[in-house]
Amino acid sequence: MQEFSELGKTTSPVASGGDVFPELNPAPEQPDDEFAEVCAEDPAPEEEEREIDPYLVIKGVSKVFRKGAARLDKSKPGIVALDGVSLEVGKGEIFGLLGPNGAGKSTLIKVVTGLVIPDGGSVTLGGLDFKADKEAFMSKVGAQIETPVFFNKRSGWWNLKYLADLQGGLPDQRIKDIVEIVGLTERINSRVGTYSMGMRQRLGLAQAIMNKPELLVLDEPINGLDPDGIAQVRDLIRRLRDDYGTTVLFSSHILNEMQTLCDRVAFISKGKLVAVKTKKQIARGLGETTVLTVVCDDPKRAASLITSAYGFRTKVQGERLFVEVRNYNVAKINRKLVENGIEVESFTVKSRTLEEMYRELTR
Image 1 (cartoon, rainbow, N blue to C red):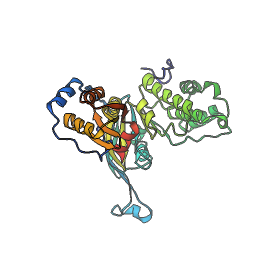
Image 2 (image 1 turned 30 degrees about the vertical axis):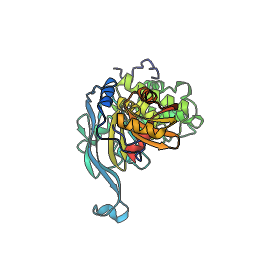
Image 3 (image 1 turned 135 degrees about the vertical axis):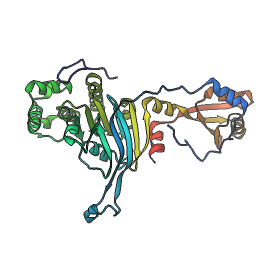
Image 4 (image 1 turned 180 degrees about the horizontal axis):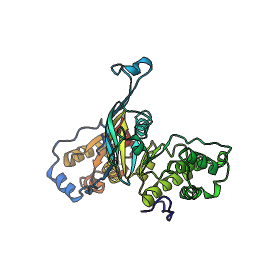
């Protein structure tokens, strides 16, 4: 593993859900023997459990925001931002926090970085307890919270030197190494006011990794970026993890990017942790539920046939039959209909989307 001062090669870009349509007719509790036998032919793939080496450990963290005099009286009602959140982030893991606006993502980020003091719970990093030794804890953390702010009329180099001096100073070579890591060598002497949003984000990341952090905490690092800017930040985060072993905790509401970049994702809603899923679990969850739209000459008889034979939930609307299928070879359903004299005009397959999974988990 490389130290931050050693430049390596740039790496290449590399649950359970709710019902899809709950108003469907309920399926029989026990499908027939034929259904069980056919399902056995197409078992869901088993996922190997990956052991997590807990590095960042958050236990029972709660935070209620109160206004005015109510701040001194915890019995007064307030806005619950975090409600007993517990999770573990592994060493060298890219871990995402996903949830709607106001879910508590940013508050949790600020608790980890010491910007918000929780009402209860604990946060440890590599065994260091934040409350017991804040200075040692924070020496291992780099952070970019919200949109980075710089002196626009000064160069990127000037800004980094200024920020480094606030932290006790850094050798010029160290700053050059950081600039090369974030890919700003060609523009580091230009005024920050001429930078694109993506370049400003990379400059912010340069500032965040000045202290060679073991944990990099990012709040909405790709918010407002165009596709090129998103790709640049994504590749940089991967490089920091792959080349330097940096553990990354970041929040976002961009669903596809979280699925692409993260090893695991925590779904947060109304201050509560509702699920933690690996990349494989998310992919499997998207594929496990499929909605079939069948246009045929007798949709009611087709629905009865499918429900009685396989136990799937169905709904008939006019000439269309909708079938909710989980972990099943849908071609066999089509064959079943044809073999029983159903004339199928069209057969459309629609898999569950990440947005649907997100809404099911966070509603």
